[in-house]
Image (cartoon, one colour):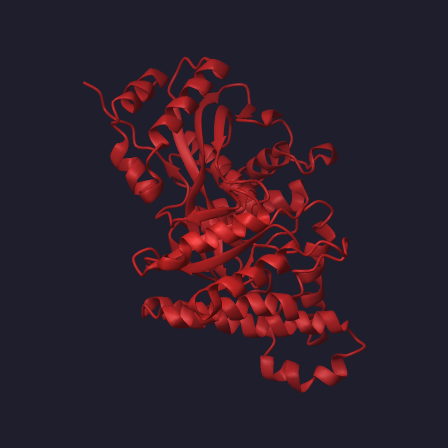
Length: 429
């Protein structure tokens, strides 16, 4: 459908049912947002042919902090904060990506190799995803795209994974008739982030963003990760799920992130294994004294976190199936405690004065006590925490957290039922 058809359909609210399906309680205002994005796309690129509209969500990690890269289990959910793009194919093998507030990214898809000057940029993700898909046998090509991003950068909801799934979905729907699976798109995003962008992430972020809903993920087989859909109506059970941005900076933290999988891997290597999922917890504890000196004490503590956190994920997944909110709360609180005391990704070494995550966790405990739960969200060291807040305490929680960390720091999250999504075109006369 040409852009004029999108504009006409949006003006008369023809896409209301789809927007309600995608955004639920966050649907109000989306029609205006899509209209503005379509007009910005028209102004920037003047498309003459068919135009597609796609979106990709951010994600919330519910339990399973730094377990994915060790072949463990994770609970995650796609959320309604997302990235939306209007796009059209190009015939010259060039990608032009314009993002609201972030300028134009230009990539000529004439080489597969990573480029040092592109590390840490959207161009690296575009090139890396295209390279991954092309070498996997999928078709690729150029396109123009205007992106409206509502997943906050550095907000702990993985804006990078949302962009990666958005880009992968562009190649999927423009050139492969939607035939690329969510797992394949997730792997392409992780490949691009690891080898082109320069961040050593696991697969959880991308898989949650490409799958949608609440999912229990099993990474024992990285080539074929297990994905089990769960149904969890947090709002209906009387709770609000919040992400709280604490204001800490992620700058210069890549090495601190990278040290976690490296140190866990060092412990696994002591047993002749590549990942901790291949080591029995009982065997680890039996050998703990002999491991000291071979690896750091911090590595041992991080391994201890993995073994217990992996069990917690499975316990919380079962609690979700049984609508047992008390166990869910207990698992989430224990996850937060373990990140502080064992995983130790709450206190950045680069700045002895930066303790925003620890302060937010402590304040959440003071406000919620045993009535709610709080934990680290995402990679750690700076950024965002997550909280489950009973309905009656939501106003108080938001007021006190925003008094400490600034207006707008609390974001109410709602679960989105699908991952990367192509808007179905409204048929006209």
